[in-house]
Image (cartoon, rainbow, N blue to C red; front, side, top):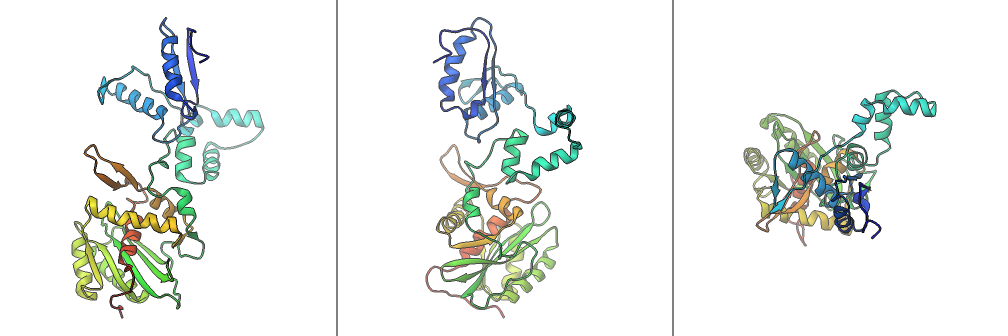
Length: 335
């Protein structure tokens, strides 16, 4: 209301955190009619904010678009200063001079990043990239609630617990672009405990088959589900030949199948009937999956590809939980 009946330049600070950004923008527009400038600045506050839409429109306009989704694009000029840009322009030297510190540029960035609780935190607060927390299928707080320091990190040996009722495994297959991830759980009552996580990077399929067969036999896995999409089919059929077709179930990934796999994972987290390692790489991989709705109304579960993978461990976990039977435990023990 304070903007109304005024004119001139308008600067809106931290727009993404305003309670009613649309009303604020609507009031600001008439104020600049006599040639004023409207500057909207903010830290990001998630992907769904009004501010993030401004940014998307500005980038589209800079790329030559003049209309998007039936809307005429406002001729924004887009600017950003992330931590790397600020450091390159002398931020560290100014801080050192002001505070009497002696940070190097690299040390300053490393120190700032070390203070962040997650990659998502770092990207939003320091790198001008909106948090994906609002669209993440597994929010961080949900992931934290099921972490247990006793669970083995990726690459650690089998955590063998005699009290396990049974063991089950999920295998998400990759070769060059993506990694193969194997997630083995043991059931104790109604809780599935992580017993081992294996990540295979750029290994030939025959070598992968040898490693996975050995791991499943060592753990005494009763049943496993494997991603049989694309190159996974060959590995799945080879493991079936070695271990038996009732011990290895082939799963072909489609959008409906991914939804069927992803929903029980979230349910396990919400019910706290799952235990996973307290490990940054695992946490980020689980947080990577997004639930989106397509223009035709279909549900999709997918993840962006990053240096740490393509949510390979998430899908391995989902396949492991799919292998756990409902009700009575069935299957054959691998020996």
